[in-house]
Length: 355
Image (cartoon, rainbow, N blue to C red):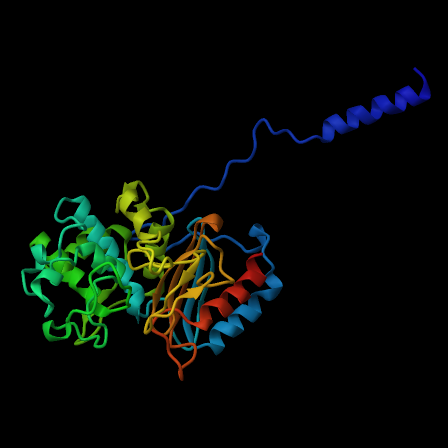
């Protein structure tokens, strides 16, 4: 064999031996769910994900400076980051504020799949005629779905949900407005299930996910309180399209509706969930439409449970990720009802770590 031919022969052998064997590619990591009773929770290192660990301290410093109590990141259900600040601990409870609206939305969907209600039915069928102070013909336009989408058309000038305040402003479905009237969904579920909302919620959602926590029924606001990991459990169920382990808690059809534009007036709003990547958004307290992504720095497929003083559950399907933040308002002088500049700043810090 000539020298040149021999050299080519050797190179071909080396190339063949170095070529990757794709006949059995590594299996994708399975989704993990923590036990409902055991306090252990599997973890995954940032380095194994290829994240930029040199930027983690800047993220922690930012969270602490912005009055955070706790912060968690899950990937495929495993804890990648879990931090507590300012004396808060893993066992301490904190309020979800309006992030808890998503718990109400999910519980309403469960009641529908059990045949207790239909969200396209007028709300007065479940609440009784005269539950608002609107003319009866206008009240009859309001369906359960309108309560889920913030499009009841009722006056939004007073957040105290009592009949005299629930006056007519626009036909249901023609005006989006962030309003506490969503709380009437709690009454709908209680009436149709024949039990208290708490009992139904506990049996159908809370206990199935192994959550702790309780509802606080205030004069104006109805707020859920729990520890941080319980918030993460709900976020993990959301990441899995309403499924927990082998059980479909909320059927996928309803959940897909919940995390997609529920109407065209505010495309960044689903069934009490906030949505990224849409053409524009309206925010609480006004009727202005702002073009562009709700959170420009966030992944466009992200959706979120958002509550006053920056209580957050971000769910990012493309990254199989759930992000939790609980705490006091990031800006005490300008606390938000839901969306705030904090979201975009936080995602800027997060991107420096995960990308």
